[in-house]
Length: 250
Image (cartoon, rainbow, N blue to C red):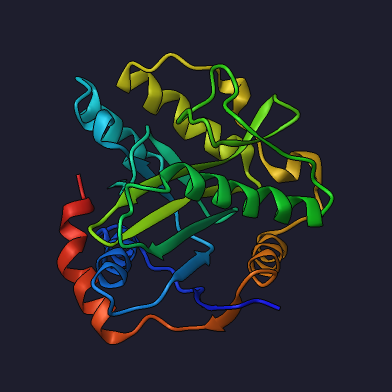
């Protein structure tokens, strides 16, 4: 039997003003302050290109931001590190906010746990997946989730607060071409050398799987170890998110 609870949130917001990223930031700060419990948020996002801090230092950053806007995506500054990642209506955005007295300890274990949740959820739906970086992948990372070592399905990043950690990422369910179409010119502007062939989605492997199926599978995996408590975004978190939102707009 699961021995502790976790709040699960399915609310997402438009990110043109940075509000959706601000919600994740507010959750991290409030969990760190002991005001909220361990929280897992997963939802269907809007069209966003989330840039990392390293991207902001690139000579072509302003051009990359304009490219994303021209293609109908809202540019935001992501919370964790890494390079530009794409969210759209055929992806699942997820963020796991975990209280910890010393979040520096356990960084790797949290990455492993998040990657395990995603791969196990994919396995429930009959999609084989492994963890590891594919040579030439976009937003490269040791804990990327891939299929057959050929296409990237999910990326995972982490950000720490004083007494909590945020482990978040994006899982691509469909619209492979939409992801590739915005990444190619954006990465060109940022001066990033990569292989567009590493872009993939679950739909390429299992066409009948939708975003709702994937969300249900992830929650099912979380329920194996925790008592899931469906939870709305509370007013205090939303108020804090509105204050933090401008920090995430380039």
